[in-house]
Amino acid sequence: ATAPGTVLAALPDAAPEHPEPLDRVLADVQRLIVPNLTHWNHPGFLAWFAITGSAPGVAAETLTAAFNVNAMLWRSSPAATELEERVCDWVRRLIDLPGDFRGHVNDTASTSTLVALAAARHQLRGLPGADVRRRGLAGRPDLPPLVVYASDQAHSSVDKAAIVLGVGQENVRRVASDGAFRMDVAALAEAVAADRAAGRLPMAAVATAGTTSTTSVDPLPEIAALCRRERLWLHVDAAYAGSAAICPEIRRGALAGLDLGDSLVVNPHKWLATPIDCSLLFVRRPEVLRAAFSLVPDYLVTEEAEVTNLMDTGFQLGRRFRALKLWMVLRAFGAEGLRERLREHCRLARRLAERLAAEPRFEVVAPVPFSTVCFRTRAGEEADRRLLAEVNADGRFFLSHTVLGGRFTLRVAIGNLRTEERHVEALWELLAARAAGPAASAGDGAPPV
Ligand code: PLP
Image (tube, rainbow, N blue to C red; front, side, top):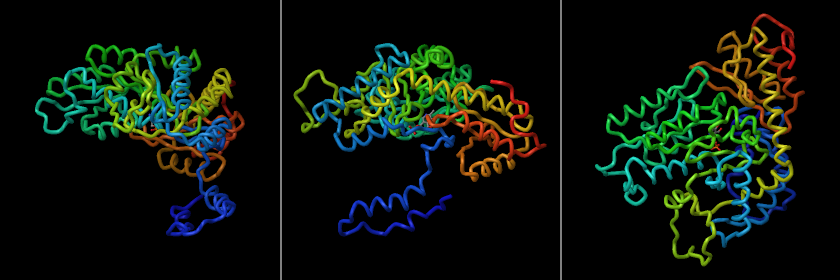
């Protein structure tokens, strides 16, 4: 394992004054960088949300670097702009969103959620004419505190967006979730009512479809109905699970209501075989985004009418040509090829969950709607921490943890295209061999899958 400071200590303090041959630099990549990477492309990488640098994705990234275009304006890269429009619309169709959703590509879900909530703030349904874009938030007696709602399981990017947007972290209501880690809609309604009674202005709710810890899905139809009634912008964070919506049975089942928000984020870099970074933000009324963000200095005014200038979709001017990798991935695997792989990940996760549930030393502590399993041993936190450390020290697998209901919880997230049944079987054997408690041999009690 790499000790903190290893790489820093091996690097000179200052940049070289004179050119060095590329082969020497590449030799250092091999010697110094590769051994000190965390290998996200490894089939045993099952931490956080595993990702894949697939071959078409890697090829596309190489081309992207070679083309080196900045797709801020249509004119600054027509192909990058139009490919981005088309490929986002392909994904829109694949995940079955209505035609009024328009997508664009950001780096991360954190950016996508920030941009979506900025659009919500711009539109501010409860207070038309607030004109925050122009007048800001500070020193405005006409403007009550704005409030954003998300469950206690929602990603920290919601808080960060609130910090950046001047909403303030204390105005993010972390609504309680139920026993299956789904937002409690009655608690949401109560929180909105309490804020209104206190003179605050509910602005937006973020529903999560595939939470970071357990991949639970908030009750989207009920939350959407409440947001409509309360005139709140609904942003759906499907950064991880949104990719699985390409499978119609998952879209209709676990992800029913995915299309009910004003905006939706899906990260192909999490579970759609696309190298990081690639996050799609779909917005139902793209004109709101443009109204929130379009700001065209003289030197960027161009003649083309009726074209998309991607700089109008967010706060960034320059942007990488990220659509190329998604396009190449979709073409190289085909939608059916990707569906097969995602279904296999879900099957492997269910199988692992069944094995864990059938072994008395373990308990599975959250439902498994997708490809992530949360579990503990019955031997207590200290033993679980030790188990995690031992499994990771073994070197074949890399797992992470979360905290659920105040309790340390191990987590296996399957999402790499190279992860196969044999890897998950080997992990199960390792867990069974290392877990504390009365010994039972690996595989005992596992039901047929
Ligand atoms: N939303 C959810 C549900 C996530 O799980 C994550 C990261 O794991 C994010 C948002 C943030 O993603 P990003 O790293 O692309 O900003």
